[in-house]
Length: 164
Length: 164
DNA sequence: CTAAACGTGTTGAGAGCTCAACTATTCCCG
DNA sequence: CGGGAATAGTTGAGCTCTCAACACGTTTAG
Image (cartoon, rainbow over all chains, first blue to last red; front, top):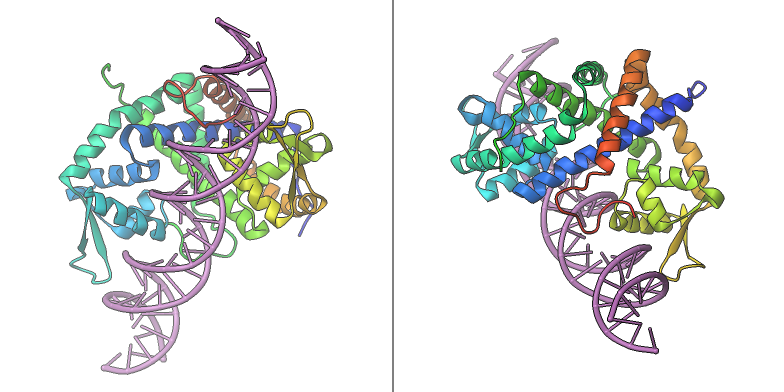
């Protein structure tokens, strides 16, 4: 291992501020959804991705990657969503290993009911706080990070993790 | 309730990209710490804040607010850290309700051992990916969000939550 | 001075997430 | 074709987090 490239004072500040901002922000989003719709944000995302898919149906693995979930997490989540009746599982006709997850009418209704409160929270806690210029910057920064992080695997490799 | 102010296409993109970036990034940070030091990031932060305090000691409530933790979470966390021997609890001399949390020598050593790997992850996954200009923007954006979010309470009010 | 309100910290139940192990199916290559 | 490797998804244990309820000390107002 080489010498550690420590953070200088400026970087420290940036890092802590970023940490604080994201924690506060996502806490609010999670909480709003939990209070307002009885749904954790991860579940809301799953329902959203399903709602946008053709036939409101996706393979589990597709759903896992688009909703940034591990397979395991998704599996647990869908089980719970199935118990609640928002999602239905069906075997995949073309691949006997596969499973399809389908958003039910009840699930869609639930999502529609939850959406306004959620969007309002995102708008008021994020967009309303930033200037248009800052919004553009945030977009660029996020794109850069996403691009970099999605194709640089952690360590050698991780077993049951993320995407296909 | 008023009409929902939905997100337009541009905002949608920004929002999703932000979501993706932060999820990927914090997943990596968490995982690096978990693998490299056997510590969740929240615990690392607690140890860090203690290490910076006078006598490496803080009141539980102080520690909760500086580490962005709820009281309850902190209480559980400190219990676990105490079992591991990284932290010690002592009654507060000036307020019989209070508790002081103190970082032990072992805890400090653990933190020192964990730090290089953690910093390297933050640097390579965050700072190395952004231009100096983007780093400045990120700082401004984060400051704006933090400022806004820390003094606008959620809903009417929330019981057992965050800071003093 | 006392009673109510408030502040500080803890606890236990319930939920979600991670990790590792496992089953079942499909792919690939000799 | 046959067998090993890769892929799809699930499961259960263990851990952390949240929420609500609680216990106890402190402050404040009548």
